[in-house]
Every structure is written in structure tokens, then in C-alpha cells.
Image (cartoon, rainbow, N blue to C red; front, side, top):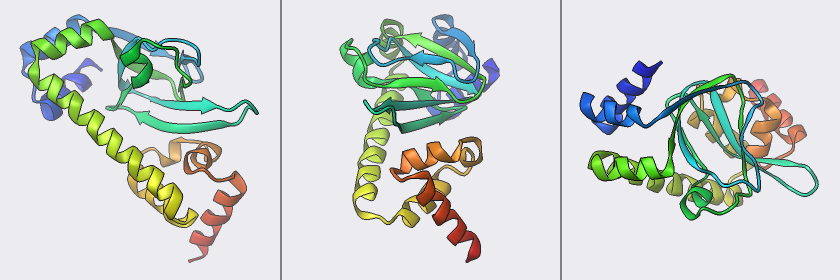
Amino acid sequence: MMNNFSNYAKEYIHLNDEEISLMLSVATEKKVRRKDMLLQAGEICRHKIFILGGMLRLFRTREDGSEHNMYFAPEHHWMTEPESLGNGTPTLYDIEALEDTHMLLWAKRDFVSLSVAIPKLKIYSENIIARNLAMTRERVFNTMSATVEERYEDFVRSYPDIFNRIPLHMVASYLGVSLKTLTRVRHAQVKR
């Protein structure tokens, strides 16, 4: 599994073996079971996570108990709760394993040190933050302007590798629609 990270780091961050070894030397390897919580509302996020295998989700629960999924992170993706991590404040969000998940974790102070020692990592991390911000803005725009059908098609197109791994009620939550509406949309597309 560590080869997964090494290959990822070489291909996407353009790190050499020495830089990868430095990153791994301060990482904590962790395995969790499906439905395990890695972060709960009210806690302070203390890690950046790289998923080697499995999938995590970031979500928020309203007072009425309804869950709103914000982000799904399958293997070879990063996960954190950036506001809590950056400010050291309690989060409003939860991070849960949707599948048995194998991951690497870096404490904030270690990741900051790595970003100083490995400038390519800092640039890559900043690019991920910028890309996530752009994706979030696009998602908000689509929620306000696109039809349910268009949002569904965009989700399937954007996440073809995870669509069948997520329960439909979580997809509906991510899209901001009811399960009944999502089922209607899916049936209408099958008939086409």
C-alpha cells in the first residue's frame, strides 16, 4: 500500500525518493472499519489524511438529524477539515469511513514542516486548496442554477469511479435533493 503513496507522490507532486521517505517518516499509518468516525462535530481536526484504499466522507448534521454530505474522498485523495485544522477551532463537520479504509495521517505541525522542507509539496497543497475552492464555488452555482437532472448527470460524470460505492441517499444529500426525487430522475434517464 505504501507503494500507492510513493507512486502518487512521484506522479502528481513530482517528489523524489528522498522527499517521499521524509514524508513517510512523519506519517502515521492507520486502518479503520466502515462507519468508524475519524472526526466528530465539536472536535478539533489535527491531521491531513491521504487515502491509500477505501473511502471517507465529510458531512454535517442538522439539528433535525438530517445529514448533508459535502465531500467524498476515495483512494488517492486527500481529506481534512481545513477550517478546524488551520484555526485550531472545533469543527461543525464529521469525517466517517464509508468503507474499510487504509490511510496515512500527518499532524499539522509535521505537514507544515514538510511544506517548508519540500517546496513542491507546499505548491501542490496550495493547488489542491485552490482547486477545491473552485469546485465548491461551481457546486454552489450549480445548486442554485442547474436542474436536478443536470446536477445528477454532472455527479455521475465527475465521480464515475465512486458513484456505485455510495448509497443513493448519500448521493441525494450531496445533490441537495430528496431520495424520492433522485430515484425519479434516475428512472427517467433509464427510460431515455
